[in-house]
Image 1 (cartoon, rainbow, N blue to C red):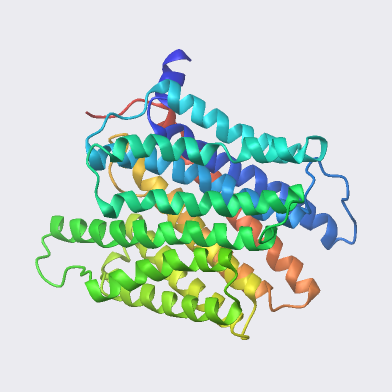
Image 2 (image 1 turned 135 degrees about the vertical axis):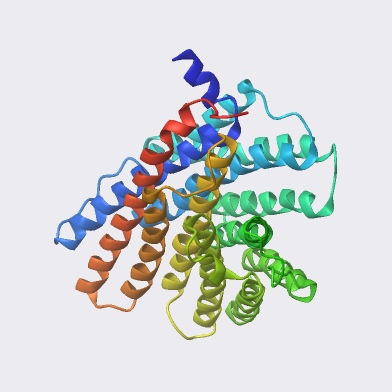
Length: 396
């Protein structure tokens, strides 16, 4: 048991990716329960949290689930980028405890002062940012330092949500939630835009391919990243739907044009790769749908779920799975259940999008099917990769 705990808190990806998987499963199962009761004509009005259920659900998916996934990624990747010492056991355990305290505070928020809930929940991101700043300073590069700005956007978005719940004004909880989701999506636009073509190129070279390798076109990369970063800032600033919609449409177009040069068709037989391409495609499509919704065409909620489930859920699941396999010395081949999880996540996004245009009966059915697909994907992820997360590396 001591050895397992030592490993679990010895590397950031282990505890945080496990936390993301478990929380992504449990929190959505609770949401499914609430939806199921309402679909049958009942009502659940007594919750341990103070927020309306849909607001609690949105907040915890963005700042809870995605926050854990980002924490595990940065604590693992930044030392590799810079050569800095990785975080020690004590820091990783403390950071994980602080993240968990935020989840508990939100869950019990109906019986806690809202200022206390905000203080606890807002503490994790600054701690994470301070650690990665200390590591980035060993080899500061603008393309890596920018992640501190994205974490700042994520924190400001969460602060806007809590300010509304406390009652001190500001942009409002709905605005903060949208900006928070878009801050996570901007991080995916940057990181996914790096790893997807790079991992595909590496696989093609290993297979003996020497021509028509994935290409990154600078005229597309710069606006694609800049627009993705601008969008959550614009939403927080309250620029209005027309301007935000125009930015989102341009951003989605840029992401899809970037993706077009990354040789996605070559990856179709390799789930560990096509999952990255599929999630990035969902990112571009989600931006387009959101922009069109803000301009008056289509459902904003449906578009937000394409981003939240398809892009964020899909990319985090793909990256977490690959990182666990690679950092524990296992072959970079997705086991069958993990490949199924990738497909289920995409299915959840599509079904949830369809549900927004269905009638009330179809709406609840789509919501429940999408939630079930998400939950099964998370369950497969945890069950399949738990031995790797808890066990030793299979090779040095």
